[in-house]
Amino acid sequence: MCAPGCRFLRSDTTTESWIGNSGPIARYLRGQTIFVEGDQARWSYKMIEGAVRYSRILPDGHRQIHDIFLPDDTFGLEPAGTFSGTAEAIGDVVLLRCPRSCIARQSEQPDLRQAMMEMLSGSLSAAQDHLTMLGHRGAKERVACFLVYLTKGEIFGADRPLELPCGRQDMGDYLGLSLETTCRAITDLRVSQIIAIPNRRQIIIRDLPRLRGIAGI
Amino acid sequence: MCAPGCRFLRSDTTTESWIGNSGPIARYLRGQTIFVEGDQARWSYKMIEGAVRYSRILPDGHRQIHDIFLPDDTFGLEPAGTFSGTAEAIGDVVLLRCPRSCIARQSEQPDLRQAMMEMLSGSLSAAQDHLTMLGHRGAKERVACFLVYLTKGEIFGADRPLELPCGRQDMGDYLGLSLETTCRAITDLRVSQIIAIPNRRQIIIRDLPRLRGIAGI
DNA sequence: CGGCATGTTGAAACGTTTCAACGAGAGTGG
DNA sequence: CCACTCTCGTTGAAACGTTTCAACATGCCG
Image (cartoon, rainbow over all chains, first blue to last red; front, side):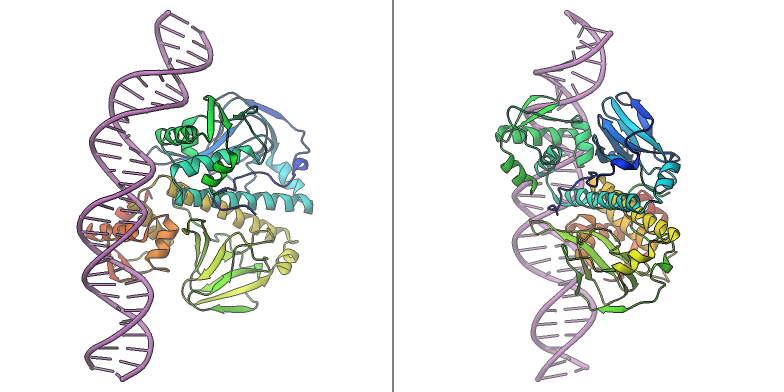
């Protein structure tokens, strides 16, 4: 089990079979909309390449990003008839698209059904962690948490920069922070020698233990 | 569908049958623990009477309440082997307890399985709304949102006070606010004539439209 | 090279937290 | 029945962190 504030949506369970990893491939260009809040849910998706943000817009114009989907993640599995958020391609995106009817049919198989159940409950747990983070953590902690999440447990060093899937604005919208505060938190981590920033889309993690410490592991 | 920031965990789908509404009854006294984060999940629960808070404690000692369960709500359905949060009785509580093995057996029935799926996905959607609220709303808005949620769409007036399931501290921990800020937000609503406070556990809603307006509907 | 999106920094305004003191209410025992 | 006590709620004032608005820097693409 993972510490509070640090578990994010991730398809732990190998559900490669849910689509059989074959099916219609769809491509979206940077900024394109995959579906909109309220849309009839016709498809479920599995990420192949790129990053997708899943968000809701508030009446006051603010946007809350609930998830950022990365390769191997699946989304749009909720049984509800309509999507409760909007999915957009952050960069160029390649994904597998599977008709819901096909999912429904496949879910007759108990193990697949179980996997879907676990994925859904994983998402719930992730949302609760996210929620906890927004409720009680400061800006630097949130950014640290996000970076640790992006590493997915892999090791990044001076030789291997971490690729950011999104820009500062999206990071802020995910973390519940303004773009500027996000930026300042990143700068903070940089001047503390915990990270380095070769360019806007990469981060070098110089001191992972300290980063994890700030993130609250 | 409900506006952002205002849909909370609620068992919309009538899953009365999941336990058949019969089964071992359990009683807990105010403050007693029902299960702790990390516990092996042996049971699932259905609320009969009282209120239960479901929360996680952060390393810094803060507590985030993810949900407050009220009569008819079910919880502990997650397929994970261990609970990812702690459940405690807020006041005296009566609930139905069903062994997980029984749930598993019953989930062979497609319609029941579907209902569980929908409940889980309802929880996810609720968590996302909660998350959105914590990310972008001010104190008064959050409190308004909580009060609107408590009405469950029923009509409360001067003659029928709304019963609060919990005290200010729990409200704050649910809303991601300090106890004092929660209190001040409530006072704000009172001096604006939107609510009245006959006593600490009741609220009279004098102007529901305005309350909903502040809540963001 | 210019133009545009994106990122960074500064300073003031704003809202929340924190610490501290006080008030109100419920329950208990004299 | 009152007084005591304990918990819970309320209010105040200062400290703190985030947002906002503004200006400027950087990098990318035509």
